[in-house]
Picture 1 (tube, protein in one colour):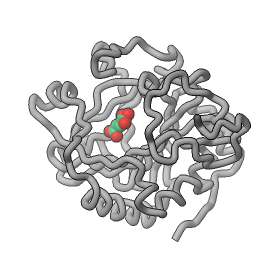
Picture 2 (spheres, rainbow, N blue to C red):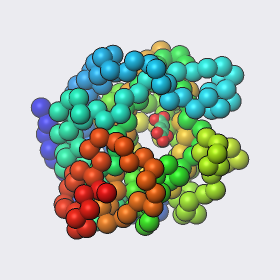
Picture 3 (cartoon, rainbow, N blue to C red):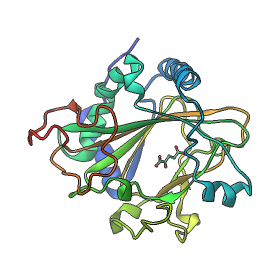
Picture 4 (spheres, rainbow, N blue to C red):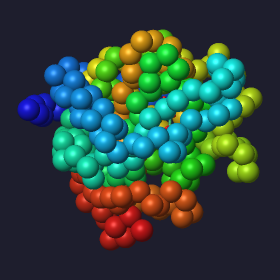
Length: 259
Ligand SMILES: O=C(O)CCC(=O)C(=O)O
């Protein structure tokens, strides 16, 4: 099923330049439409079997602010432990070549994965935030890739990014509160409308959010958080994810195996 054509080196350099300048890069058509459709079906199957809806990860404050009422979000951590197609995707060179280029190292290490299905009509928004306070690292060489398995126009609650916001580095978040940035100017957040097969890469210091899915179709994504293995975590937050430390490309020069 998988075709593994990677972008040319020149393209990778350009993607890395955009990422370094803007704090994100949207890679169009990293997966074919057929592959995206297959991953969408597999994602919905896993969610139907494994997400018991007991711990809806919706940020209540964002839902209240956007809709004045509760919204809902289905999620599944560690999909690669339930379906080998996701394991293969983690080491697919079309992904790892871009991941290595944006990190600026041939070595790419898994941090964690999260599948989100934003249901139709009231799929949950995310408030402006950085990922940094959830798992701070020494050199900030940590990034996310959001795989889109179906189209994500604005009405489906696509991700929004504040271009260049990474340049100010980690921002003050309320550690007692919900880790979001309530005073961040929303006009700086630009919708990253995506099509099935597109992958959005961004650094963990880039401010991002997402809207409510008000459309009549679910939005299906898989977020892969990855890092340079030579960038040690500063705390023991978020170290529970299955497979954390797995080397997806290159090797681990530290011998720490992610610990
Ligand atoms: O998928 C989304 O809509 C946003 C996800 C996000 O911001 C996060 O998990 O940090």
